[in-house]
Length: 432
Image (cartoon, rainbow, N blue to C red; front, side):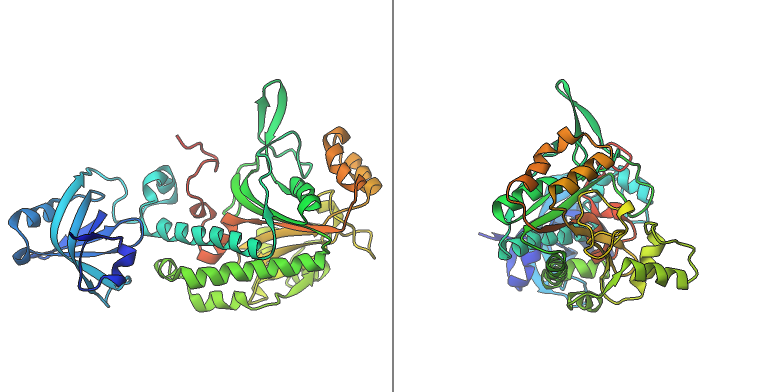
C-alpha cells in the first residue's frame, strides 16, 4: 500500500512512491508535460505529469484541473535543486476530490483591500502561509521560553469592568444589567497573579476602540504580558531582551522555509540575537531627534517617524528608558531621583517597525497609588482589588507587554501590520 505523507516530509521519501492530498495553486503545460504547482498546508512544491508515463485519463484530468481544486496525487518523490523547496513529485495517478471554479485570487498582483475581503481564501497563498508558520513558531517559542524561566500561565478575563490604563478607548458592551468592556490589557490581573505565583504570563486577545489609521495599529491584537514579583525594572529588561533573542533564534532555527518564501535575510535576523541590547534614555532620544532637525519637545510621545529614526541609529532592538509621567499610565513606579519620569522602557524594533514591548516597574506604595487613581479621575471602587495587592504583602514587581502581531511584522519584514493577523476581525471592518 502506498504511504500517505505531507509535502513537508518529501525529503524523507526520495525515490519512494507516495500519496499526498493537495490543492492546485497554478499550472502550465508544454504539450506533453503538465507542471502542477501543489500545496497541502505544510509546504508548496511541483508535480510533473508526463503524458507518456500516465494513462490518457490521468493526463486529461491534469490538463483540466482548475485553481484550488483538491485531489490526491500519487507518484515518486525526486530531488529538484532548481526549486525553492528542493523536491518534486513525478505523478503517476490523480484522484479528484473537490472541483473549484472561478477562484477569485488568481496568480497576479492584488491590492490589500481586495485580499482582506478575501482573507478566508488568501490564507491559502504562499505569503500568508509563511507568515502564519512564523507566527505559530513564535507562539510555541513563547510558551517554551516562559516555562523554562519558571513562569506559570494565567488567563485574565476578556470582559472587564474598567480600563486598566485609564483610557476611554474601550469597546463597551452590556453585561446583563452592568457595563462591561473588552479588555485592553491583562496586566493588572497579572500583577495579582505575580503576588500569588511569583512569575506569571498571559497570552490572549486585547482590544483598542480607536480606528486603525496607520500600518502600526490594530483594534484587535494578541498580547504576551509577563509579570514578576521581587523584580526590579533592570531585571525585567534582562528578561525582555532574552525573550526577544529567544524568539528570533527559534524562528531562525525552525522557519528556514517560511523565511525563504518571505525573502527574509537570516543573517540580518542573527544580529538581533546578540545581547545585551543598547539602551538610551528618553532624554537622550529627544536630543537625538532635535539634533536631526526635529521640532519635538521634551514631554511629547514619539510618533512613528521618531521611533524609526531612533531605531535606525542602532543595529539591534534598542530600549528607550524613563518616559515622562504625563504620557504613561498611573501604575508605574516613579524614578528614585527624579520627579518627572517613571521607571519604564519601550523596546523599539530595528528597520523602522516601532515599539514592540512596553514595560515598567510598578508602584508598590498604597497611598501613592490611590492618589494617582484619584488624580486620573478613575473610580476608586473599581480599583479596590488592585489596591489590595499593596495592602497585603506588597513586593517590588515589574512586567511588560509584547504585541505579537507587531513583532511578527518586524521578524517577517512585512509592509503592513494587517498581514500578521489570521483574520481581519476588528480592523475597521467586521468579518462576516
